[in-house]
Length: 259
Image (cartoon, rainbow, N blue to C red; front, side, top):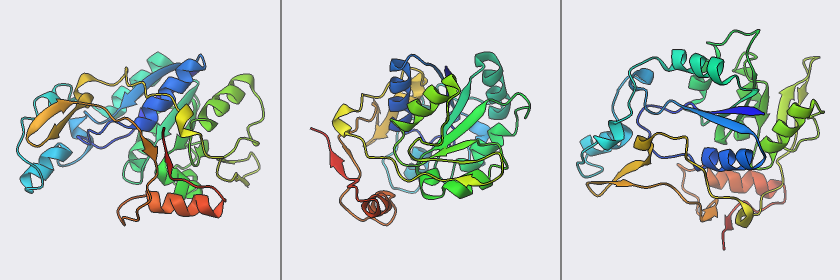
């Protein structure tokens, strides 16, 4: 099966997404073909045209740094046109989005460029769909077929497997979708994953500029490695406390450390 992984990111938010790298690795291990469409390098995707870390510099939140390496792959073309091109050339069987609240509108805007008759099936997961799955379906105006809530390391490959075999998907854990009669199918949170069995992320299809981040005035080539999932603290700006709550309500413990 061909899966197009889409990260509808805002320009210059240069932290690599571990989830997409992990899901890419799992899908490849399952024998699927993958491709990536990442909007981080599109200068005209947002209004300020400023790399996120450069904003911190101007606000005296970080030391000044040379952002040449971060800008080496920046694009001045339209992400909407380029998205349509990769869908036409790669011909995915499934388009899979990873979304937060701020980039969800970008995902819907990308999907509006596709001809409804030819549009592949679409699925969205991530923090925003996990906490507002019905809203994620409603606000897409029918452009998103499935929402996956919670961790996707088992549910996304299982969805691909069943779609490929034309099997029933209603028993998949953590999936929401509208049935043909218009009623909403809801599943509870999936069982949490053993974090020691999660593979390292495969970031091979990300552009070189995405591996660079500033730290203390210098730019380093780096990428994230997950040593734990969740957090025991309750910072108000983070989604981890809410993850702890919803999983506790499902008699599961979200915060886990890797060996």
